[in-house]
Amino acid sequence: MKFQLRQPFNNLHLYASWTLLVIVVVGAVLLAGCVTQDPRLTVALKTARVTDVRIELAPDLKMGSPLLNGVSQQSQVTLVSHVLQQKLSQGLKGYPGGTVPARLVVTLHDLDVASTPGRIIAGNNSFIDGTVRLEDMRTGSLIAQAQQIRANDITVRGGGLAIIPAMVINAAVTPNQTAVATQLAETFAKKVRTWLTPR
Image (cartoon, rainbow, N blue to C red; front, side, top):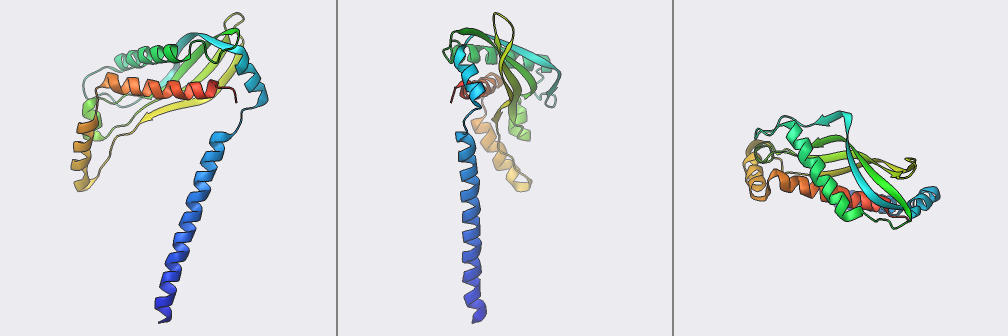
């Protein structure tokens, strides 16, 4: 009888512990998102206005495994660079609205836009990872720099018998490589815009 009384108590205690853990984690994430910038960065960003966008490749650029559709890594870099340049130019020119003309420079350090076979068969993820800096167009001096910005596109993975349903799901939701690169670029541009927003 004592055992039967203790079991619900243990379950209740376990449930309460997990609930508390979830609340702490969610609270920490929300607080991290609400943290204000260093006042110096806020002032610097308020003065700037993006008038040019440049994409650079780090000399030690990392890439994913060879593509299963025969597309070369150089073609993948060209695709990502083009789409990212387009999305950043469309979404950020003139932002955040200051008077100092600024160049937004993105340096890509790690990227992988999985091929359709790679996404369906292997469950390969796609991502763009880079640093971003804002330079004064007139003097070339640094206005601000973000250490790392990353955009991800996650596919469904499965093991054992679950691999077949995972492949079916990936086949149903997998767009072509250009669409994946575009989605990654849009996410990356949104994160850059958030970073550029004085707060």
